[in-house]
Image (cartoon, rainbow, N blue to C red; front, side, top):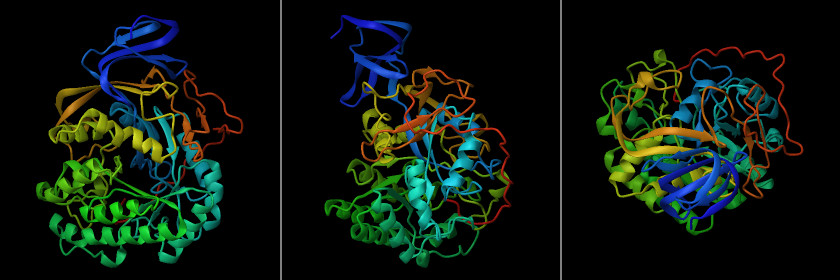
Length: 489
C-alpha cells in the first residue's frame, strides 16, 4: 500500500494502532463530508485540509451505547441530554440510545416521543436514538412508535420503580411480542421474575443482594425464551448480571430462537465482596454479584453468549442515594468511564481492543439497526476516538460530566484514556452537532437521520425523503416528578 491518494480530504487521522474490522494495525483513515472515504496504509500520501498523527495512541470507532437513561424531560435534575451527551463524548461514545422511562412522559406512544425529541433538540453533542416502551395498555401504540423511528421496545417483567412504567404480566408480554413480531421489531427486556424478588431484610448490601437472587433473572429469561420461540419475535435481554442466565441463552441460540443479551461494565468490573458499607452508589437492579459470577460473565462474553457491553447509565440526585440499600434508588453512573473500566479488565484477561470494540461498538450498532456506526469502514460515519490504551488514571467523580457526580468508580484506577472524539469527522466540542437517528430493520442501516434544530450544520447527514424536522417553537419543560422509593433499571 502507500502512494498518492486522489482527491482532497477534509481530515486524515493516522494511528499505528487503528482498530479495524479485520484487525488492529497501522492505518490512515481519510474523512470527507462526514464519512470515512478511505482506509489506507499508515504512510500513504493523502491530501487533506487537516492531518493528525496519533502515533501509538489507538484509533477506535466511536462507541455505541444502547442503554442510557437520560431522564429528560420531567426528571432532568437526575440527568439531561446536554450533560449526558457531554459525558458520552468524553468517554468515547458517539451514539447513545435513550431508554423510555424515568422521563415524563415516558416514551410509550408517538406523541411522547415527539415531546422527548423536542426536549433534546439543540442540546446533543453526540448522535441520539430512542427506545419506545411496552407497558400495559399501549399495545395499539407500538406500531405507530415503530413507524416514528424507535429502535425497539423496552419492557419490564418486575416493577420498574416508577409507577408510570409498570411491568407486563405473561399474557401482556405474549401479546406485545406477537404485535412487535408482526412488523419485525425488537423487544428488549428487563428480566427479573417478581415472584422470586423480596424486600431486603436489612439496610446492608448482603440483604439487598439476597432479595434479588440470580434465579429470578434465570427464570425470567427462560420465560422470554419460551415466548420468543412461540411468537418469532426478536428479543434482547438487558443487563445480564447472573451467570445462571448463560446456559439457557446459549441453548436458545443453538435452537434458533432470535435472542441476544448484553451485560454492563459494573457487572464485569465490580464485585459484591468489594461493596463498602452504605455505599449505595453501587446499587443497581439486577445487582452486582460475586467475583466468581463476574468471571462467568467474562466467559459468556468470550463465548458470544453475551454480545454487547453497554452502560445502563442511570444517575439520580445525591439525596436519593441514602446510605441504606433497602431505601436508596438504584442506578449506576458510568457513561464516561465505561470504556476504560472494561478495557482495564479485558486487557488483564488477555482480550484485545478489537474484542472490546465488538462488544461496545459493532454489536450494539447491529442490535439497534445502525449499520453506518460501530466500525471503521468506508462509507460509515466518521465517528472516531483517540484512545490511549496504556495510560492510567484515577477516577474523580467531581470531574465527570454527568449531572450528579456519584459513581462507584470514584477513586478507582482505570487503564485507558480518551484523548479526542470526532463525530462525523468533526471534533466534539461545546457546539451541539448530534443527530437524531432511526433504524432501518430491513437493511440494518439508518433510513433517516436528522440534525435537531439549533445544532451545528457541519457534516450534517444527507437528507432522506420523509424524515421529519422538529420545531422548537413553543417548547415548555415538563413538570418535575416527585421522588419515589424503588429500584431503578
